[in-house]
Image (tube, rainbow, N blue to C red; front, top):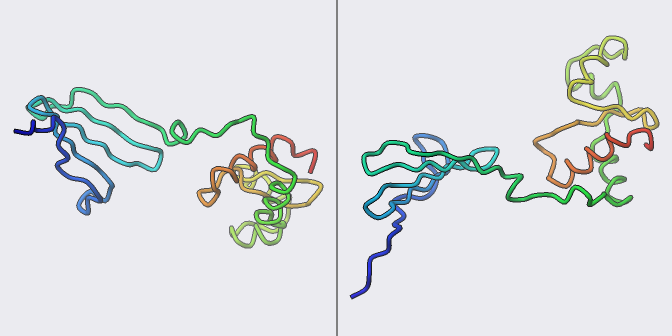
Length: 148
């Protein structure tokens, strides 16, 4: 006779009621684990047999998909990034509804963007639309903006 698995997946997938991706795993007769996907990674909650939360931990997506910080972008990657993401003053202020003049908008823009004087363009410091590699390139260009 086959031995019953200690772990049993009770539910897995998108929870419409809570609007999140999750998995519930029964841990034999001892309790349950709940793993929930968040924008930043995962939350793992451990519950005892009575349903009391006994421990929680966060696992960050960046820890799972760590980027080698020493992996500098190639010249071609930087060139493609600059072409794709740069915005001139008139374009960015129009898109954001800011005054067009540098004197009136630069302080507002510097919160979320960096300016490359040599190109006369603004670039997002952080963007949800960036891939992980594009974010690494953005950080690199921002740190070395005098070269561009």
